[in-house]
Image 1 (tube, rainbow, N blue to C red):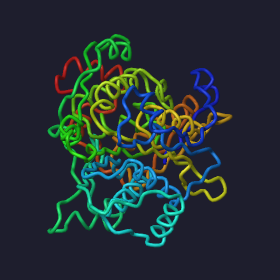
Image 2: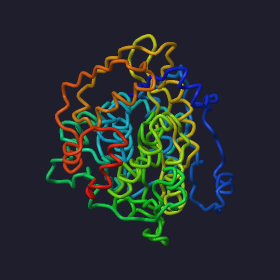
Image 3: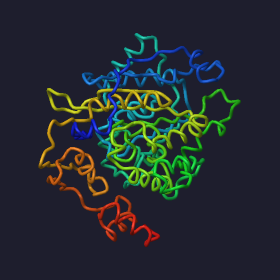
Image 4: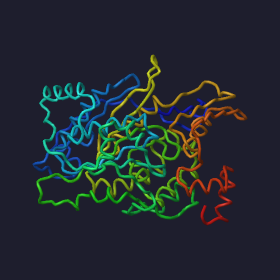
Length: 434
């Protein structure tokens, strides 16, 4: 969970958009939805493109409610033989994506329920609402944590985030390990490009080259044209799960970032982060719509929506004003930009603190999730829009032990250092590696 500090004066000068009222669940019949998407209704019922939209600053969703909504959604999708889940890694532990991944696994009978009471309650709720029961057969289920450039998850992190049942399958000799480690340098395929004009606009003309849309090969193998159309089974299901929260590179985290960055390739990740740095973090932070996101949206609409049966399950996390505990403020399930935009609207309300006065001194404590400056630098760019000019920032970082999450990036940071944008741009002209 991240809360961004923002001085009101900065907010007014940079035109941070005010969020509209959060919508409630949208309903649409299958035939209406097919018409709106330009497709022909078949004998297979598909959920509406926005299946679930629940959330407000005052909302506090229980785990039971989230599981019930996830079960209803999976029931509406129908049986599957192949399910691929893309959750975040341990750096997004508080997103509750680990819990939701466990709910999906339990629904498909891939793992036993870790909370039998909750499972029984949801079965009763499903029966009461006449929802179809979970499938009798167990599908092939794989999980690729969206590491991006981060280090692979350890067994203890998998246990803590995804639960003991899923973690136990990582070292069970009788079953294939469902967890796949994403290698952003080797495991990817380029599926297309966003136009160079979009990159040029986002970088003020500094870069004029197309942006490569890259994905882990296992994701792209799930595209519909690889599926036997004569089969009665639906195509492979891809579920992208995660939290929408202010992000220094993308404006708002998650949605298609989870694919093109989380399980993307070195060229796409390097160029997208460079675009974000050149465009300016203060111009991106908390803005769901921006030039870099437009590039990803173009690639998503052009390549993902037409080729994959891809759905997003997004959370918005916030702090309970009375208890101080982090809780689920919103849950959004859909297959296109609408569910992301609604989550962004809510995140703007619950993840930004507008300060009346710029503090002269701020202290940031980094917990065990932050073991590198690559991650720990969030302490700087999530406070610098609020802290007073000439102010002091103190960072307490007991777990930081490296610069870059990736060995090569760590080497580059050690060689060049943190020297500011003008110096870095100068060094880039001298150092081909950089």
